[in-house]
Image 1 (tube, helix red, strand yellow):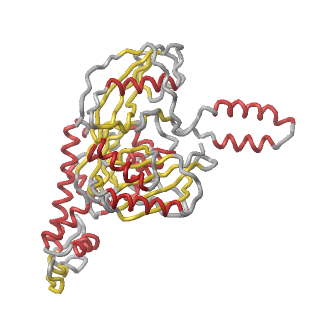
Image 2 (spheres, rainbow, N blue to C red):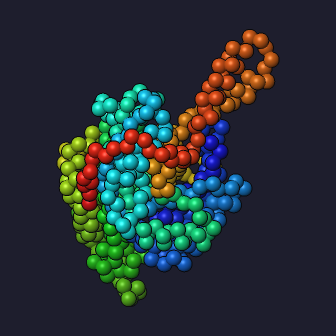
Image 3 (spheres, rainbow, N blue to C red):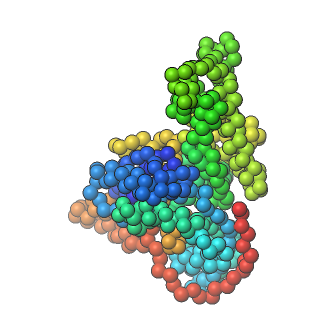
Length: 463
């Protein structure tokens, strides 16, 4: 439980590094943070390893200034731009009649074995959609259940090997070699969804600077994920081109006057209908542009992004089954009127805008929409609501069990010599013995598979 993690969100605009571990009560304890401007990265892809590695190294160096803890594992976000996802299933016999983590590991490995992975792609996640014990109803966690056969249906996320290798190369320059990858949209879902939204299923759309990532999340699993290579920076580019103004001026206009709903007609409440902007190539020359024209440019780009997401979700057949609706996050979610436009496009589906759950610390605020991915990486690594799944090293990771408080109670009880406390002490010892099997991200040794059979041979790709 004392593993220290380094989480790195490799974004196209910024790189965020956070060092964290559990405190004594199993809360996430932030030890250090660092943020640097991204260089050498475009639309989630590393296009210049030297520049990208310097940005990563600088962010990690800043995070390490406030702690002397040695990092055990590094968890890094990856973009959906170079990912492919498929479904698979597997089944194993339960020789002793009691399902243990050995059988859970075996059935997950069998589902992975049954899948057809494209040769140039590597596995990032194998997440169970549901388990079945002896053809019973679907169950979330089969541990300690009785049965003779265990089945699983899984969602497998893979990523292009060359893209992952480039990230590893950039990290290696910073002295980081042990890496686990997490899909950006998966992390965002972990950061912004509450228990009820997860239970009934929700679509999370992460509107970033150069990309839009989205995922359908239900229970403890990804059901579908997608990617659009368009983000808020494209609005800046559109304004720069259409208004013939430098990108810096276009960005300022977007931030100050960007709105999808504000009334810019004559005699409006703001009393402003036009804005002065410099001309590109001749910044001493100033021209006036109507704000309603600027609004039209912004509206067209945002509408295009949302329509593209809707079309991909329609193709998946899942858009009508979102029990908790759609949750929008990411930097572009701050755009005035984004919720209203999304409601118009996704007619009849509940829409909400959400920031990630804030993690209390003395360094920075995580309660901002552009922090969704980094917060999700921390919840993936240290969260207590994680499901059994295979990580990017194909090892089984387990739910984190909240038992650190028991240790504290044991310590205080051991210092108490009253005979009346003996029964309670003995009871606490029993709990401690049970606890020894609970670890964070500790892979199980892969046992020789027994009684393995395939029951689902055909794998369907979702993309």
